Length: 289
Picture 1: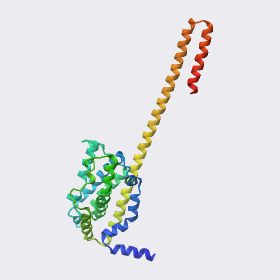
Picture 2: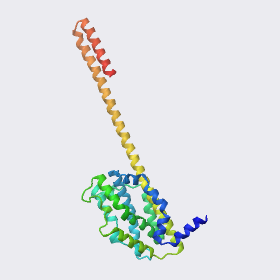
Picture 3: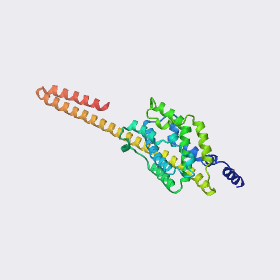
């Protein structure tokens, strides 16, 4: 018990960026081990996975960046407000247009978890703007860090060329991601918060990770359901084709028998009998094999 209390005290005595890192350590590991992220780590990214991920990211950043813009002058938001360097919404829109065409907005498909995430961001922007520090840190610095690696994996997996469909991973306003992350952390650590507000920001950082995990899991579930439906349809099509082929073969056999029987009326009885035996044997061989 004493050890836990000392650990919590040490966390609260450190800078805000370190506090968030410590508070979200377990959630971070869980996020990295979702099936969707493991697919990325293994370099097995499907086009459908990436498209659906972009759809969800658009809705998330739409809510986040609207909240940041609205609260740009708030004392807790102003120090970490970098729209020129970090804004993702326009970049994601370009990627979606590349994959879906000019009417991409009409084709956005997102799971319920994405809508819950966006709703939470709107609530935070309205009721607790200081909590945006947690959400912005979780998303933007994550994109600057792991996003660069994921971008290369996506490009290789999908065979994308000339950066087409990969604008989300590009930060033209950031010449050095490492130096910018240092600047961002220092700005975030300069934000003045009461003890109650600081605890609230740490709780919200955990919530941000949990919301991301839910999005990843529901995206993967929708992909799995879609895959199962496709397999079932293929199986039905195959069975239907096989049934049709069998029925056609049987009909052809019947027609052959009828034709031969009709023709055989002109033959002597002995030849008709012999021919009938051959027809029966031939039909039997077809069904035997």
